[in-house]
Image 1 (cartoon, protein in one colour):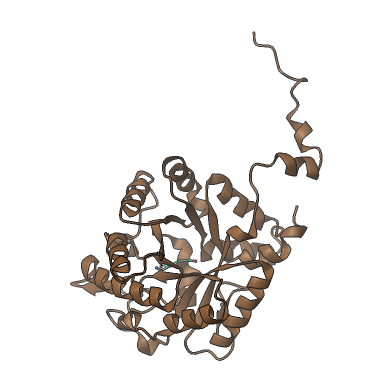
Image 2 (cartoon, rainbow, N blue to C red):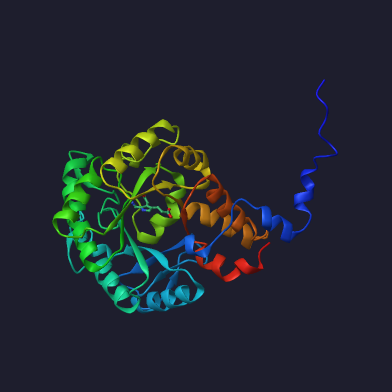
Amino acid sequence: MRKTLFPRVRPRRLRLNETIRDLVSETSINKSKLIQPLFVSGTLKKKEEIITMPGQYLYSQDDLLSEIDELTNLGINTIALFPNIDSDLKDQSGTEALKEDNLICKTVRKIKDRFPKLVVITDVALDPYTSSGHDGVILNGKVDNDHTLEALIKMSVNLASSGADILAPSDMMDGRIGKIRDSLEVNNFKDTILLSYAAKYASNFYGPFRDAVGSKQIDGISKKTYQMDSKNLKEAHKETLLDISEGADIIMVKPAMPYLDVINDLHQEINVPIFAYQVSGEYSMLKMGIDKKIFVHNVIPETLISLFRAGSSSVITYFARWTAENYDNIS
Ligand code: PBG
């Protein structure tokens, strides 16, 4: 019979106090690895709280700049920016997305002018601009892949020329990374980083985000015809390897916590950084639980740590600001 290792081996020795625990910890939260998503409005004069995302705001142009000022003072140096445009500007094919002076391009220029070192990530997808709320152009009752690609290419070049540092195609059309990469190269945007939402699942956790950008779908077409099925893991490898071969620098897994296995599996397999997106529904669920005192706010770093432990290099989270403000006090 094997001899028991106890009492020579006592794992609790390394849990004796906080200093010891910190010395042996395998993972930590670093604010340079947190990215704050921000919503900008084309119509508001003052910021407004998003009802389904308590503590998150739809910013006016001016309020957005003050928020960024505060974020950078707190040590958050990367943002992901999303537009909420006037509904009069939306149409079937999302033509507003292609304009060089639309809300998002103007806002990026303003931000980079005032905060040249801030890293700005912009989504590349049509959903804030289409009357259908879909990420693509609808043709014959379907979200048409190849027509959508043309729009995404134009949009990407506009965003890069406005000064966006990282473009994040979040639409899940086939072939878009290669097409976007080629047109960036031809237009001399050789250093624009592509963060591909490679493993983006069709999720029920995006609801509050759709309230924030005003992209609730009204037709019968499902986003499941382009976003991934939550039942699949191997498919995440397929999507990721394709996007890397087409020129993606970083890949994203989204949502985050319900897909920890996907993050971890890809982490073992691929050699580009993985970002996780803790999405709006994950935020609201945690925030409302904290506000109702169902659990304490230390659940926030616990969720973030789980994402880093699984293999994320950085995390997009609506808790970035909160973490930067409070992290030194969390144990
Ligand atoms: C748009 C997009 C979505 C999110 C990021 N980019 C929503 C969607 O695909 O419907 C969701 C982010 C969140 O829920 O926080 N393509």
